[in-house]
Length: 212
Image 1 (cartoon, one colour):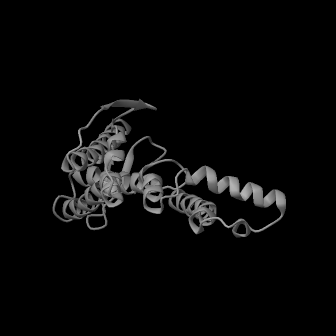
Image 2 (spheres, helix red, strand yellow):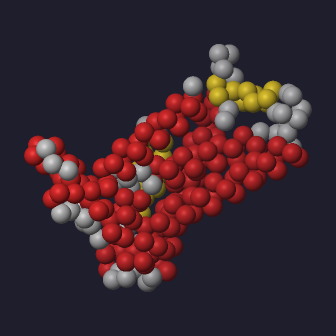
């Protein structure tokens, strides 16, 4: 993945031409901003289309801003009108699935750009879209926070308020010096905290390996 150098110019050495393709920090920042906006729009569009597929209205949507970035959101509360849990899962995971499609397509377009137009900056754009797409997909699957992946897990297991219940179980087990499964809890409740810890360790390790 491209990185900034000390001369304040972003450079990527093309393996075939062995020539440095450079971008100014402003251009690189605009590409990153645009990629985040594109991924966010596609993610929320997928949620919206899946809601309408099951005859539910999009009751609320809007624009959000955080740390200088702009995105959109769609209110998913209408999914509770769906009785079938698989339909709920479809709506909840539609955004993540669409992100994966966009990221995979961007990767292929980046390879085509590298092979046919190595002197143009398009490969930068598709490479950035690819990495941001996969990164945000992993974030949305993060069980540590209440994102789409967490709510999909809750819907699938029918363990409502899974996060709080699981942590409370381990706190109680620690205080009483007993194993968590001794309290007769669901396997999903017992396994949630170790899964969170393992996921966090893997993500931090990948981040350190990528940027070290």
